[in-house]
Length: 294
Image 1 (cartoon, rainbow, N blue to C red):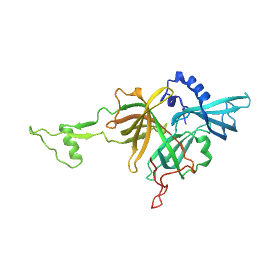
Image 2 (image 1 turned 90 degrees about the vertical axis):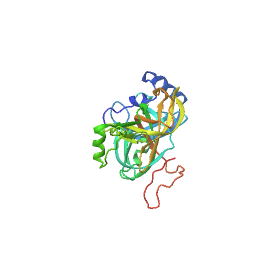
Image 3 (image 1 turned 180 degrees about the horizontal axis):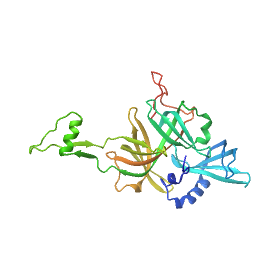
Image 4 (image 1 turned 60 degrees about the vertical axis):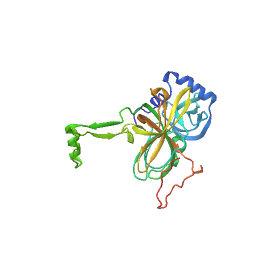
């Protein structure tokens, strides 16, 4: 994969010029998230080796994750990667169809499917921990969320065909036009306010263009930046909802649940441990895997 890095992902939450001070704060005030023996390529020499990897994160559902490895040659702790990190309760039962592993072999994008073969792709924030557990074609439970960028409220909630365009459209679907009191063709109006759209990018499948009505809104903050936490829908039949975090500064007015959201988002997720308590069965009455949402 090209451009394997997290610069654009950090820009979802902070100015890149401020990244060093936030990483320092993360190192000082963060807590151990994971400690794993990982076989991968960590250093500039390009040699694959098994090293102890530590991941550090701040408390709370929305923060960042820093990956640290001890460089034996430099006798120092080396920061090897870091990215925004969300602990989320929206869980999806998905079948892995492809793993786009990065060159470093401890980061990857997961390409997966719902039971109805709809694709959901995301960056695996704990691939370093769980990579050996994955098998292509098997179902796993993932906690999936997203960070928004270039996000806005839908301004034009309707569009219409008028005159001959209306006539042509109606003919296409086998209907006749209707006329107003003046004998003019009445326009055909389309309502976009309930449209659900999700289009993963071909080159970067964990990034997607989207549109969705807002189901719920909360406010939160991270790194002294205010965010909205939106619950939106990205797929229908089965219905799949995600929480999307977007900067408050993106919006000229306060969003409400009467609005629709559109723009781009970076999807991320991680494997839910099998011993974690679940409130929903993973198999339905017909023996099929089910989508899990809270």
